[in-house]
Length: 328
Ligand SMILES: Nc1nc2c(ncn2[C@@H]2O[C@H](COP(=O)(O)OP(=O)(O)OP(=O)(O)O)[C@@H](O)[C@H]2O)c(=O)[nH]1
Ligand SMILES: [Mg+2]
Image 1 (tube, rainbow, N blue to C red):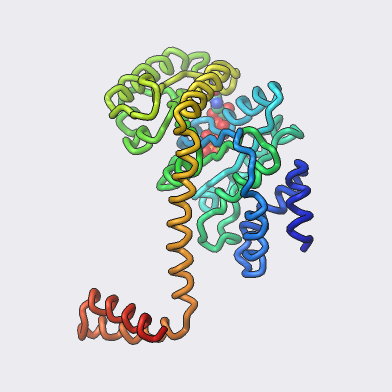
Image 2 (image 1 turned 45 degrees about the horizontal axis):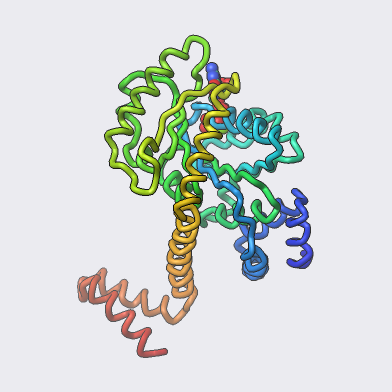
């Protein structure tokens, strides 16, 4: 393995192959790789902060890949560099999403100013949370202006993505009132913009109606102190015909400028770092215990006692920690 210093130098020079290698390194669970990955991340402390981290979610088939293709191409034409990272909790089940993305983002994947990273395979990750946060930092080091983190709108992944991005987009399909009911309230609450896609052809009028419904629903949500009164907003667009995308970009920048002016933009990133620190620390502490043979031995003794109903689970937990503490 090349030295971390030379790898980071190449990443900073914008070498996309080096960027891909660096992401693979941070995703690795091998202990020696973890050490190198830590060194790599140290080098990124002083990073460019002009980037915009965008989270994007939506149910399968709503048009996420098509949106990223059109939106990304528009921005690249304006001179921006666009990175796309996928967090796909269902990749193992569907299996075909990476293939699908390659064909759906055909133009973007051929652009030198774009970088597309499919979600890591489940086997490789071994159930560990994806290293998307690190991948974002690496893309920023490689001077990407926009980092789009895509996730399928199922389960917890969208909350996780919203906790590592600046702006969160919820892509929706045109549909009647029934579908509006189906939107999880929690997702609406984290969205900065609700984008009703496929506002073209026969679907256009339905899309406009759906958009008005969402706008109404958003007005009923609690107001955010940090944002202008008219946010979060609902907009219509067509990813296929590339219409309404400039408006999406304008709204993203409105929000960014406003938050930058009030200091919220940078505060949000710092709060996210603190949250990350907390959860990383918690994970590492758990990992540390789970590798400790004495602790494991003790644990199996207590497990038996809990099983035999000789001790309450609460007392067992208390005692095991006290014993560890004493033996230090
Ligand atoms: N009419 C119309 N069709 C669209 C639009 N955007 C996407 N589609 C179509 O919707 C289908 C799904 O689009 P994708 O971009 O693959 O959707 P996705 O959300 O990435 O789907 P998954 O990757 O399976 O989660 C494709 O047939 C697209 O051509 C649009 O703006 N208008
Ligand atoms: Mg897709």
